[in-house]
Length: 119
Image (cartoon, rainbow, N blue to C red):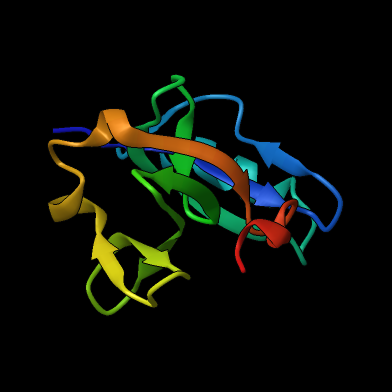
């Protein structure tokens, strides 16, 4: 089974998106992407989810989920993506919380280009 792995990077000024999908059995494409981005860039992985407008959701994105605003983060300890809501300081696993509610996710920005969206 192949899993789609995509990344983007923030180089301090702009978001740089990987130009193609990488499957787990083609690591050369992934290496090429990382090698050609500046060394101080911040890399973010695709969650595998799409928002209501058809946009891919990456870690670092700020999303609107029902009446909440949340940041997408990744947990190394749990090896999963989660939403951290600033309103009530709760976190929700994307795997479990959003399974049936993907249609309610909307990207409204990201933490690097729109930090003011998170209070």
